[in-house]
Length: 178
Image (tube, rainbow, N blue to C red):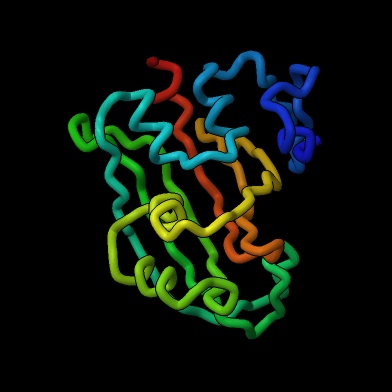
């Protein structure tokens, strides 16, 4: 069902069956949150436009590590090196937390200048990719709900090969208020 979002923001049904076995009624979500869950655009830019304030990308952690197990989403094996990155997206004026994200990046699948920029600066992945001029494709993999948070997982492909897996977690309460 998730692959239906690759060509449309509307899927023709209200209830999405989650991998956990639970159901998520898409119609009952705040409209803007539906946009964030199904977009293939840059989330930071979309948040800035909607909330009309700059959005800060705050790097919480970043490290290189070896995978414990195979990653089908990145076509990597156990023992392959990835960069794990955790960030928060918050309002530059309001300081409201809009999202938390965890990313796994395959440094071998990315140009060295992109890896260097992501390791050195407090910028969003979307911004780095946009500024580098790389043509990428985002593929939505899953949507899930955990209590009062809704998340989506997608991967970014470069030249048809997966280079990043990103899980963004959105606190539902913020989106109900607007």
